[in-house]
Image 1 (tube, rainbow, N blue to C red):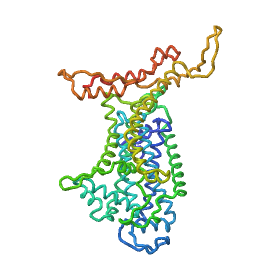
Image 2: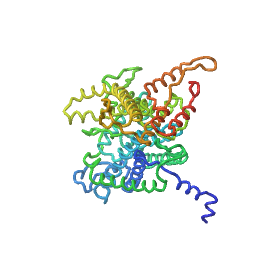
Image 3: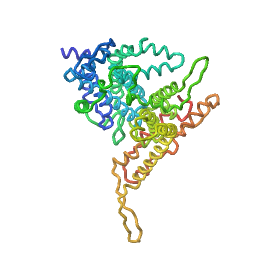
Image 4: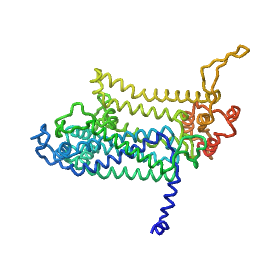
Length: 535
């Protein structure tokens, strides 16, 4: 039977191919594994919660174990949540495990995306993987928001009031969007809308995205950092089965840490807030930490952004922050295609780049972090001002200035630091490590003793890609289009102040051997077009 199955499915050959596959072993790869492990734990705990949660907004009078809410009218959703927390064995632990695993998953996905960006792992042929991880991030944020609404407590009710105001503030279609989300029944209709999204549609989307990412990794092979003997077809790392066992161990560690967090750190105590009430706003309540940037963007808008047009009041103070947040994520998603167009690089890349060796890209990444971070900090400006005895208005004004100047300063400083590190690496390759020892020669000359660099360190410091800016050339009709001029100017800006690594003759003079680590860089440079007409 095994032979019959193998002849028709090639199962044995597929397993043998996996067994021979080598997986890179680098600590930065753990972020993606932690994200997957947290998602599995979140899904398992969510299945447990489904057996006790009732997504009904029917009013009931609470008569359970928690004395603080006895006799209070609430929805069946909140009543089942409180019952789960106090009267189901392990219910509170599973609720908090579900919450913490969701937060850790989103945080791990963010860190994984940063690792992909700063190492250049998004380049051809892995652009689709970058988009899929961004899809997981956005869907995960949406799943967290919908799960936050389901208990139907006062805190989630406040979030629904904010959501309704944002939707209705959108010109022309705002009222229709609010009616669609709340099904014409504010605020109770949101539970009926979000429950199927939270428990079925969004988890299924994440599963599909992860499966596609896994298939793409099997098809394209792993990306690894540069080093001696590491090429597209020669991966240095651990065997697949060993890496699989390590991933299982990592899953157990993540499960244990999340369980410890759930058992010792309280989160979202819905019984202290009480039932949802549109007339009650939760003092001190804020947006979910991964959605706080949207709240912060609203707070950074100056007052008075309203005008009357066509007998209607238009409020850019609501639309503009939403558009800025959406444009930020959209730009981040399509960045691989933007950089590819600017650089003119059509080669496939299976070797990762050290962040210092791509100073402009690293500066752009830090500028994006600062841009997001300022909005994120502004989301808690009132709490920050309260705890540090600051004026909220002065804090907002400071953040408004940082919103515009922070990304620019972050880009400039990061790029200067990267260039300085590249110059330091070049000096180390050519002269060795400083020892601090000063030696006097018989002729009276004082020189500093340098420790030689070993072959592996020298390779790591000089083996990186070197590109040159594109040149401006007319097309077949002899025209120079504006698009070509813009592309060349962006290319020059992208590669300005670049540091060229030591040349092979300089390295050979130091006794580095006959190997030339720049061959791969020259081959990749030969595959890219020097003209602006090649797409």
